Image 1 (cartoon, rainbow, N blue to C red):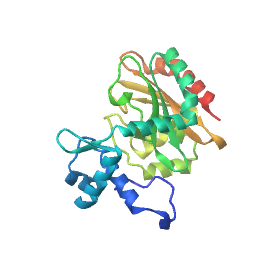
Image 2: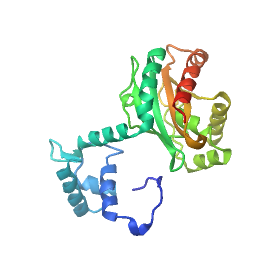
Image 3: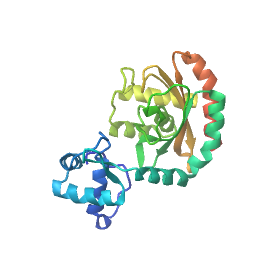
Image 4: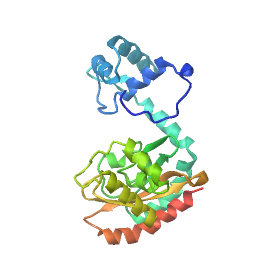
Length: 262
């Protein structure tokens, strides 16, 4: 796979290539999650068709792949079981739910919890809980969505708690893709947004991920003051001015993040 290595390095003698290839097959669905033929799986996973067939049949027998109506292989519903296992195993997610529920009632806008791993996975955040408002796009409703730290408000809020050298390192290692025409993706622009978040205590963005959307986020800290996630509040520019949105919701997000911080 071409994705940059994000996780702890281990002793190569303990690395199982067969397990890694099976995970490559599953991750082949990340870019395009529709049902795939063996040839498509092999090409996306970077393995030969024979290996794709053996791995595919093994995963099919365990429920992690299923047969689609056209005979191709698609992701299995068993992944929902493993997602449920992770969500109920993470103490921060468990502690956050009463806080998010109260915040959603007060804000009457979408509120999210994202996770950040300053030690091993500082290039991205992943949404772990999302409480919806009255209007949402499909992807904005889904937990498990991952976004680059450098362009997500939660990522920038977390980066604001890191030293400048670390911020520069994250920017240098990141893929700085434009999501909308208003996404700030230049190194200078990202540094300015991180500095703004450091000054204000929260990160803020207008239409950087979705046209018409306005978002702010405050970082949650763990042991040693390292950022471990963020609280997000998102609204619509059709209903809020930037000044009014920031004045109304920044204190709420900061308070919620502090309540969840170690």
